[in-house]
Image 1 (cartoon, one colour):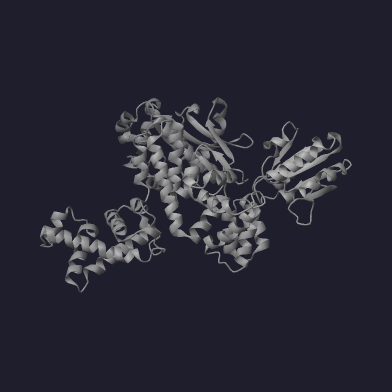
Image 2: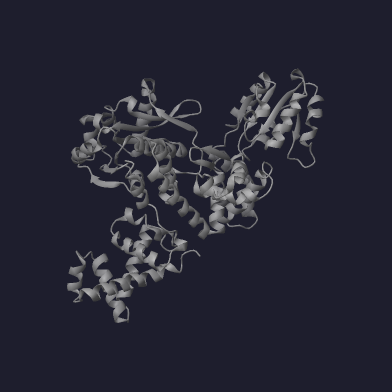
Length: 604
């Protein structure tokens, strides 16, 4: 990767008199230009170096020699260098400008012929090798790769934080130190500190407009001008991996405030969604609402901390060959019988696929999104079987069927899955058939309705596909998103809220997927569905053995109704010889007693 970029830079310098090397903070731009032979380096970030005002004389005296000006970030520096170029004859200056954003975006640089050489993040393998030279701690190196997402500065800063005594087992504490170094670098673009809190709020909410950030127009404009911030349909957003670092640091410093910000943003987005009129706006708001659930499965599958190097578009006839290649990889990854998978997918038209392309135009991912009404029995029935009639009838002409989604790259795969959900908002209900456990877990976290398994192991992989669906019509979107969004962050939960969560968890005790979405998983002792089920069962049994007769009756009720799955409250009350009034008083007492076990240990 590094050799390819260096070759592109060498070719650009040989062919153009003005070259702009760009990339996010710490990605390795300075290291790249240091390899240019016989170049005069001017570093504007060097305290002993040349101030921007001295650039005209430096350029005029270069005498045809290649000049590299590093650190051209922020409006003042960009305008100063542009003005300096106006004083130098075009034939007398060969210049490489190193900046975080393209200088051509500044009005002072309009009309110039500029060759741009972007510096992409490194592969994780390259970052891991660099981390080995900085730190001997395996945990620190692993954390460095995870948080860096290809940016060497972040990986090195993580290693420095661990060497300074911060444990790698506390990623929030490590991220806080790295975030401090990041904001120090960004201060070169925007002096002062007024924008720094607004930046971490923006990182927490994913995308923010002026009202959501409550920052005012002046601070909003400063944020918009930072090199790590991008403008989008729903406001501003922070690029990865910087967004993840800032949010991790904020959550570590103030978990209560972090949870409050996320909950407020979620309510704001869902409220806008209920009033949105344009399908594209609804799709964007839906995506943001999913991000704000904070669900670890959704964050990991749909919003990994990496920038997808691909765009998604509909496939054309010329894409048939790469689609076939990727479908074979999809079958191999899923453990499917290749011939059987080919027979099942041969009825899917090429034009029904949505494909992801990398920067070189190669097809690197796919999703089969077939119209429910036009799939035909051969394309859908084997994967829906006994569920086909009801789902095809309910799907209408604008419904979609997802039979396969695959991309080897994690970030591009997440981008592709988000595209599928956005497309479903545009085109109606979404039906999914999948034999892949990871997708089944994701659909459970998304709150899709599970219709059950089909009759046959159609892929000959030892697993029968399961069928899911979700109503993506405008009127259904707010209700769906509220159903998978915790109402309160655990840090703010009082007894009444925790009691409600416990009642819900007891009712889901025998449904692992539903239990995995419980807010009680935020508790340090119940971080998984298995741990939560065990703690609930132990708590109920202990309560049933209490020396207090009222507590013992309460525990017996919880054990009979939830653990032993009593058919009705009336049935359990009769079995325990309790009146209706006493039964429900004891039931309430038991839930409140269990809530006391969870309330106090939540993070303060």
